Length: 260
Length: 183
Image (tube, rainbow over the protein chains, first blue to last red):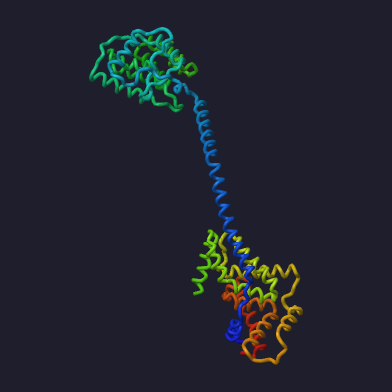
């Protein structure tokens, strides 16, 4: 058999010469109608799914916002030390006129109100922060234990000195950036202490005082330094204050020995 | 060209899926006669051909995604053939050797002296095609009506190309023997 026997042009021609069969008009109409209906149905389905999605958009967004807000609030409230959020703003801004600021702080250093009027809290972010009752109590205790040198008088140095003071303030604030716990611990007296430079204190002493506020270990080192310098009385006072601030902190034995 | 025609079929079908009724109408008109003729001459039954024809287009209309086989032509002819097979399985009809149908076809022609003319030869050809074994008839009608290549027909029927050639060869041989005087 010839390999090409699977095709025969004559037979194909004869077959193709026959009229084609066609479906009836009814069948044509039915099929076209079904096609139109299918298109319409698809359009409606698509529209419905879009509307459904849009209908739920606002409620879902609102719910998501509420959940997010509540979560963030709970997280913040559960922070180990969230007291800094509760510090009330003081009346005075961070960098008012240097003279006025210095004057008010001097007044407080000298006058030392004994009762409930809270000491001005240090501004942490160059803005006034609120002060809690706890903070006021702490301030009061520290003031009572504060060494005499804080009450030294000195004439205010305006002009260039005030610029220096402002820079030192900034440096305090910068060095008081939150530690690993995210907590800033700046005692209000830090301002007083820093500005006590205007009252005639050496910059070294001021720097030493500033350091004790940063972390307990440094504070202890400072106390050791005082002992080394044979300032045992000051060292003891500082140690007492340290204990008040960190009652559970483990004190090295050598320091205990030094303090007697 | 065949290739551009197939590409147009795919584009038309995609447009129909996107909602273009005119695209569907073009596609429908393109295969209306060939598909119906294939079904009618394969089954020999108008009612069956009508049903399967409508079902086949219904499947196309309700498709949600574009077809994945080679061409729209192969796609719709395969649907039609599968529906036909399913129908025959359900009704337990045999395409080959349906005596009742053969008698109908014979009765439709007057008992005249055989004349060698194209119409008579054409009728004889259709008559002979109708009594071919099913596989040979399928291969012959698909080749003549759909215009698909041997490879495409083989793919549609899930057989090899040589198998299709063999079936066509036997079909042609039989038709040549019967229509020797016409050719």
